[in-house]
Image 1: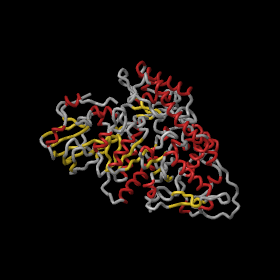
Image 2: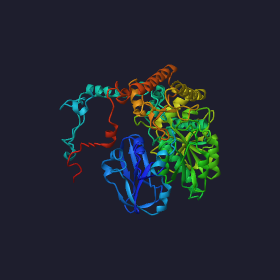
Image 3: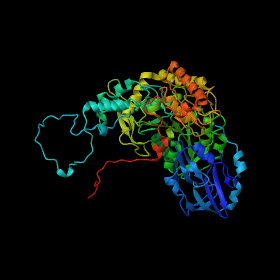
Image 4: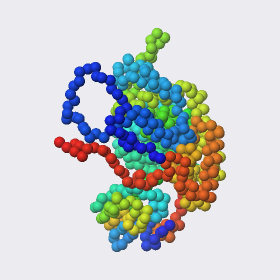
Length: 129
Length: 490
């Protein structure tokens, strides 16, 4: 399972790539593996929306289940990845690259401290069920 | 070979029906309404019969074999239910007939309300909702109406355990509630600490399923209901798993305020394939005035000389009508027949046998499958279709392989809190011999998963069709309306 070291992670298996005041988010390799074949991605956030940490910004649906993707940090949406509408399989193929979900301007950079680095995410305790 | 479609076997001018010469004067049909290009198949009667008989045999049902689809209670539906539902007095009446001409039907509805109330402990029951999720919506609308009626508009938070049916959060969201998910504790019960921390004056209620979707009786049910009540909220009971409780536990006495029944699960009215469900709702006295309208009442009790008189009644603060006419009446007749043929002892036997069967099967396969929350179960249990020494195998592969042995797959990937979940509900229908055979098959599949995983990955091998491409089916939708190109113009 890949866990790139330059990203930050949430316990809900989202990743965040931060550059200056802009963050890109997506779901992790572990998350796509658990979901299995993704058949549908709906980004429920729109450009210019201001969303709080923990609010739903996208829904990823696989043959097994539908999962909400939560905002790892608060921010103003500045771009959404529309290619996922026609090519949801990108979430399985390239979760950390082409399958980014939304791009946002941080409104509270302090919240980044709530996130885990790659090492902590890898060692995070998971419920075995 | 796949069965061709009716369009494939169509031959121009072939007919299934020959009409007699008309015995009334012929009239001209308006030319504007005639369509030359309407693509209807032209086939003979026996081709139609063979076609549908053939495709019916590709199917699996509880009349054909074991059907352990967890949470769906695919029990055998006694055929006497069908006989009674087809009695002309039930089958050929119209919902708009005056009450005095359909007293038998109204009497049956009244008794069914009473019996459901007796079984569950609720004082009042409404029969209208068309299915389980519809019953949930009705129940949550009743909770909303109750709070609004008291002028307590800020109560919009609905607590839902993480093991709940997906319809629970969907229902709450549709009713304008804010959904808050509650974790389960290490024994699979509602986590009381998490529950308590959400108990404030915005709490509308909780939606709770008992036994829950892990097939476990929630040991915290009484405390959970108390906490919610103390905070001013109401408790919605998802009655999907009532089959485990018949004659042994009345949900109203555990603290539930409003609950739906699934007549099509617990009381053997046929379902699957989208057939009509029925989701009556029972309530405690405080909520009786909010039931959907109308309910059936016994307006005159009757005596030795006079029959009772049944009538419709509009509850005072009703949330309104939730279904055209009076609900799925044919299902009421079947459920009523099931209840009256079993009697109270029989219904209790149903629950006890359902629980015994589930525990028996669980014990027979527990050495081959990991069982989270491994304790005495109720009418169903959840195992995991994954093994450390079979890294490529998923629950789906186990399910597909079961089909090779004439067994319908269990529910897959639900509840969501269990990885690679296989949810198994044998129901009371099955014999010990069937359960022994199923256990043997499941243990064999667990062994194959390690020794010959390819057999599972490529299953099923014995069905008319092999492994279907579920991704393609979900992703590439092809809609064919066959409408002429100029349809709808001018």
